[in-house]
Length: 281
Image (cartoon, rainbow, N blue to C red; front, side, top):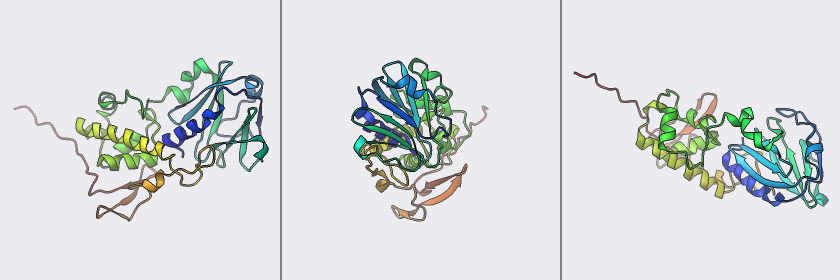
């Protein structure tokens, strides 16, 4: 599934569509995770694209007529941009948006992604947007915010990082890499983390995600940028998909945690246990 770095790389590639008028929209199949609204063409045709940005793993395209398209790439979805003269419909192309000089195509083999349309001023009220926590790169993601969210949690820290209602944008790949960078076991419970460890995790979140964005994201199976360029961060993985290999002389383990593969090095990523308070004498 594309995570924050892949979505941000996609958003950067989409900026070529800024201030361009939408000349046509065609829906080849409405059946994605949610059905594509059939009135998209009627509402957006001849409107200008004025802003393209990201909320967590969601891509938002604002139009001049105060409506916004929302894209979620799901497991295998991707957006690509082509010149009209080079466009040939491919299998799993579900949606195209045309401007005078470009065509935006939404392709999704597994159909877990979706396309939605909503009034721009009401985007924050959409159920899948309103539930999101702070963006992983938000400056407000600090020690106090993190501590308030997890201080009473007995959930392992890796699951906390994956919880979009706490931090938006992190998926399984980057949760593994972040915790290795912070040298913290994925099994450490939220209420066991000290202020020092919390700050290590926050620092690693910013560091790993920014490096990944600068690398164009990670390409494992389906993901490529809008111009077809593959990501490069997969070449920098320290633990993800490295089960059985050695890191600094220590073996990387692979286990299944909450239904997802977890990669970690127990000799480097230390397990932190909650300190028991001594009863007052």
